[in-house]
Image (cartoon, rainbow, N blue to C red; front, side, top):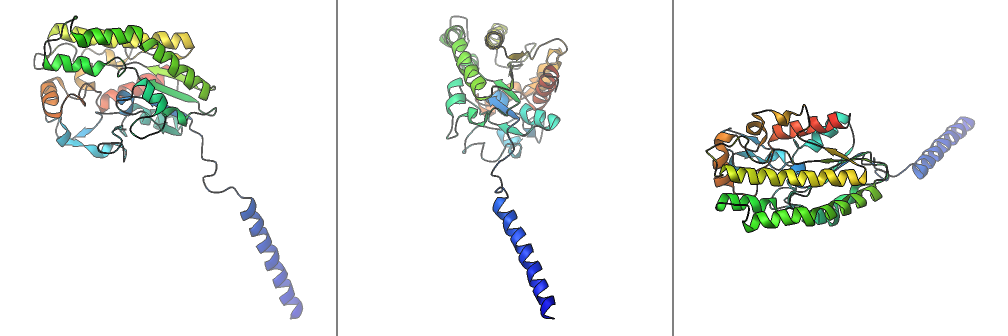
Length: 304
């Protein structure tokens, strides 16, 4: 009996020793979290502002939106980054299975992408040598695009209007250097990543709808400025050896004749209502379908 008890005690001692050894040398929980394989940077066109689900297609305003599609803590009065679950970064992550760091924040200038905005740290903090994919949609805020849209909505905007002149100056003289700065920083932090700059897709109804507060000449101004931002982005991508993904490349769904009625935050029938009721800040952004299209274009261009 004594020998049996001693054997049991010895066996228990061995088990306890093994457990202690396992606990001692096992890594702490979350000590080494999975690397961010995919990091999404940028402003509201990347964060998904406007990709809401609406209770009625004919009342496209904040009161009618399902704000539950935004990630917790990213709407107002929190950070105001407006990160939407339907935004193209989330769709790309779901398609590829990549671990996503979704850092894009509405209203972010390139300076704020690099340094942080709304109490958040730099978007670039999520980058590392393990990052495999980086997408960027940024520069529209630097180009003062919202100032142009305010000019169009509140008055008759002409090529010599101060908002147009200022935006053109920023695109020609400030934006290229800002893109160079951003890409140098991204490449330094994620030297092994494939970097894709995705341009701005449809921002105004095409063709012009008479129900909106916009003259044909103003529509042309807005489209030209968007195209100039995209060209500055493409030029920067070429200088740095990264990929520019053109929303309007051959075969893109954005090229459909009726695409703007689907991909803008509101249909052409409710465009004026959207601007009038909800204000300028959240207008001119892609719908959920617009982000569906963006995800399609980017995954195709990157062969993901």
